[in-house]
Image (tube, rainbow, N blue to C red):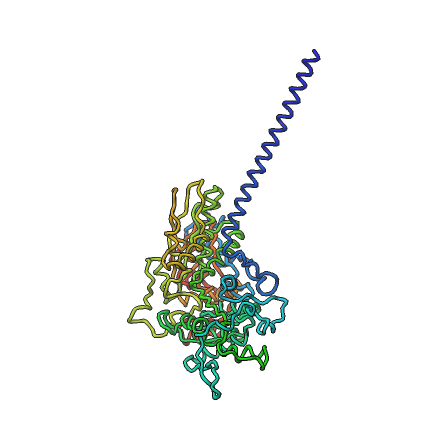
Length: 591
C-alpha cells in the first residue's frame, strides 16, 4: 500500500515537472520567436535606412538639430468645403461624408529651421559629399577655425606639394625670369568670378559647395555648409523673388543670377553651376589665386609661393535634380513621419515637383509600407495610397505622368520663349525628367506572396545609384527580378494641372480662413489636394505639403503690382473670399 502511494506521488510530481517544463519550453519558444521577429524587423529597418544612417550625425545641437519632425496640420475649413459641397449637391444621400468626412492635412515643412523642406535634402547631399570625399571633412565644433587654412590645416599631412598637379596651372615668367602661377581670369564671366572669390575667402576647409537652385535649396545649403566650414556658391534664375538672393548674400554666399531659360541652353542656371564647378574642380583655374591671396593671409606674408599650387580646393556640385541623396532624405525621414503621424492611414499624397525628391521619396515610402502591411495582413486601407503630381503651367511633367512624354504646349516652336517665364510659381515645374522624378515614373515590382520579402524601394535607390555610375542606363524596373506572384505599379499614379490664378485665389483664402501665409507652390499643392479629396471615399486622409512661407514671396506672388500688372491675373476681392471658393477655383464642377 505504501509503495502504491509513493508511486502515485511520484507520478503526480512527474506530471507537475513535465507541465512546468512544457510551460518553460512554450514560454522560451514564444520569447525566441518574439526576439527573432523584433531582430528581423530591426535588421530590416537598419538596412532600409543604411543610405542615410549618418543623416542624424548632424544633430548635436545647432541649426541641423531642428531639421525634421515637423507637425502635420489638419485643415478644417478646407476639408469642410469639400464635404459640405458634396452633401449640398446630393452626392451624400447616406450622410457618409457627414459621419466620416474626408480630411486634408498639410505637412508643415516651412517649420524647418530654413523655412522649407529643402533642409532635409541639403543635409543629405552635404553628408553624402563628405562621405564620398567630394567635400573635405567638416570643421570640428571645438577647433580654432583659423588654423584650418594654415600649416596645420586639412590635408597637409596627406599633401605632396612636389609632384602633385604639375599640369593644372598656367604659368608665366616674371621680370626676374622666375616662374609663377598665372592669375588671368579674363575668360571668366565677372559675376561668376566675383562669386567664386567670395566662396574662396569664406571657406575654412578648402571645400566649396556649388548649386543651381531657385533659392530655397541654396538657403538650406548655405545654412548647413557655412557652420561646417565650407564656402557656398549659388546660381539663381532671375525669375525668383529678390528676398532669396538678398538672404543668400547675407549668409555669405557667392551669388550668380542668370536669365531663366530651357535646360538645353548653356546659360540655364544648373548648367552655369556645373560650369562654375568645372572651373574650380576640373580645370583648377583658381588654385593659384587661392594660394597667393587667401592662404597667405593666414599662413603669413613670408610664406613661399610654390611654382605649382597643390590641389587644396575641393568643390562639390550638389546637383539636387539628379542627386539621389535628395530622394533618400525624404524616403527615410519625411515619409516615415507622415506615416506615423496618421497611424499608417494615408490614402493620398499630393504635391508639386521641383526636383521630384519629396514627391517620389514620400510616395515610395508610403507605397512600400502599404505592401509590407498587406503581406502581414495588418493593413488599414484596402488600396495603396494614391500619389498625385500637381503641375504648374509650362511644366512638361504632367504629360510625362499622363502620357509618358515630357512635353508642354509652351515648348512648341511657335510659342517657345527665348527666356521662359511660363508660371508665377517659384521652384516647381520642369521641362525635363530628372533622376529623382524618374524613379517615380519607373514601374516597381512588388511581391504579393505572403512568405516573400517585399522589394525595398530604398534598396532600389541604392542599386540605381550604383548602376548609374557604372553604365548610366540601368533603371529601377530591371534591377529586381521577381520569382513569386507580383504586382507592378509606379510611384506617381496621376497628375493634375493647376493654374496661376487658382494658386493666387487659394493663397488669399488660406490666409483669411486657415491663418496660413504661404507661397505659390504651397497654394498649388492645396488646390491639388482639394481636387484629389473631392474624388475620395468618405473617411479618407489626403496629405500635401506647406513648402515655405509667404515671407519669401512678397516681391512677386504677394505683390499686386506684379500679379496684376505683369502677369495679368486678378487680385481676389474681399467678397470673393467670403463666397464659394470652389467656384472661384473653378473646381466645383469636378465634385
